[in-house]
Image (cartoon, rainbow, N blue to C red; front, side, top):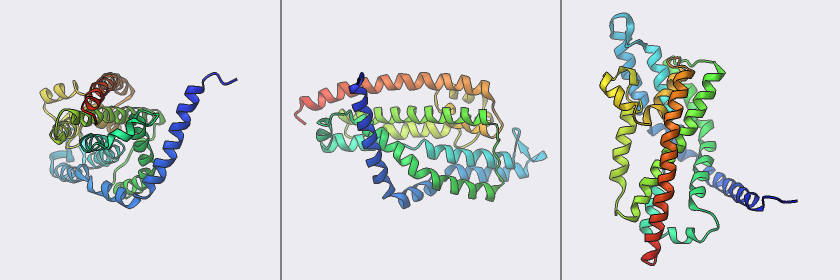
Length: 273
């Protein structure tokens, strides 16, 4: 007896979307590699910090040796690759150009199409990312820990961080219902993300006042903390606290996305789009 026909139909739709989006993303394999290579800011910062550590008395800065910096920044590069999203740009384009209209006629919220599209891209991105990460590790001498519990905590934080970033960019994309351009909002959040998340330097090297402010935001827990876990600079207790903070932010932005979507679609339909 089929007790959950709606749930089965929903997951069948997700399965079909997933297969379609995966096939679509495999067309862009070369572009994905180029995108990964263009996002090397953390690696450049790593080289700078490695040079500074080699020149510092005792060969360390704030407890980080040159190898520690190499490990941290290779980790931030790889983690940032897993957190990449572009849903804000797609939503803004669809709303401004009117191409959202046919998507509203489909029997599934466009949210799921965008989300599955990102997951499919991750599957295409992962093999090339692992190859490049291995090359960077060999070139810099980076090393990661082997504790499976820390890697599980890393995976959980990254998955939660990706969901949070997806929600925040979705909310920014939906602002196109009211604003002609949403890029400025995206740039503001991006600056906060790279500055407070740990892409430019480990958070522990920041002034204490900046560290305290950063810990009130979700950014250190989605990027810096996962990297600290696999490089031996943080433990499970820090992962648990950070995960709870990040979960709170994710739930809040998930609810905000749903509310803004309802308001925006109502406005969109009211003008006959």
